[in-house]
Structures are given as structure tokens and as C-alpha cells.
Image 1 (tube, helix red, strand yellow):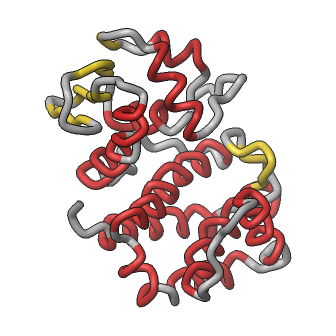
Image 2 (cartoon, rainbow, N blue to C red; image 1 turned 180 degrees about the vertical axis):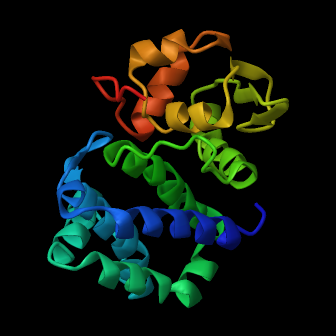
Length: 221
């Protein structure tokens, strides 16, 4: 995997701009893709995960509880303070974006558009395409191999990406933004089945849902 620090920084800069521009009412809105969280909670998550890992506090056992504890600890923090805390973590974040740590970049890239949906600032071009496509697809390589399935392939914008070195099993013919949303459980089962694609979607839906439950209601994106 190529260096992800630059793409992470650019994504963070866009997210921070959105957060700093958000009104108090916007910060209190529920995030449709993360209905247990407000916009402020999402900010606390994005800042708190690298901060907590950098402090040597790693999840064990109840990961959901660990994540919620991070959000709770920053519930009263002002957004400018959260942005400053996040920017001050560069020395720790860079080395963490290696190996499985690449998931931290995917988390920020996906949540950017969860945030955009919540504050009505959609922008399909706000995406580090060359970094996020291989990063998000490769996370499913092992589960697909374990399930005996072929590769997930994305064929869009004149380019092709695949989850792993295997024959195509499910080929999505969509733009990168839609692929990232679909693969990261931002589409209902019916929406996934309706995507322009080749191959049987059904076994792939099970793999996506095992990674992160699929929404029951459309996000309306």
C-alpha cells in the first residue's frame, strides 16, 4: 500500500473545514449513516480514535464499548479544540497508517461523506480515489477468500480495481464514490442488488454485512 498519510491529511482538512463551518444546530444533528451519533459525536470519534491509540489504549473485548467511551470522553469538547487535538497527532498518525492501520484512513474517508450527508454538503469529488479504492477493497480480500468467493471488482471512470488476485465474482460498474459507499455498508440490501453489476450479488452482501451491518433504510444519497 502506498503512503496514506497525504490522503489522510487531505481528507482530514476537508472534514475539519466542514466541522468548523457547522452551526450549533448542525453539530446536534443525527448522522443518518450513524444514527446513534450526532455530528459532534462523529467528530469526537474521528479525533478520539487516533488519540486513544497513540496513548496506548487498544481495544480488547467490547470494541463497541471502547469506541463509545472515546465519544463520551469528548462530548463536551468544543470543535476548535477537537480540530487542534487532531492536527497535533500527526507524529503518531503517520506510522499508524501501515498494515491494518490503513483501516483508520478508510474510516475517515467513509465518515467524511457520512458527515457531508448530515450537514447537506454532498460532494462526490471529495475523495482520495487512488488511495481509498485499493484500501477499501483490500480489506475484504481475506473474508472473500475464506468464503470461497471471487474478487469484488470496481469498473468505473475508465479504471478498474479489485479486492484481491482472483477471478471476478461481483463486478460493480459504478463511479468510485458510489463503490466506496456501497462496499462500506452505506446501501441497503435492495440498493446493492440494484447496482449496475455483473455476477451474483447475494453471497457478497453476506460478506459486507458481516464486516458492518447493512442499513435497513436508504440514506437517500
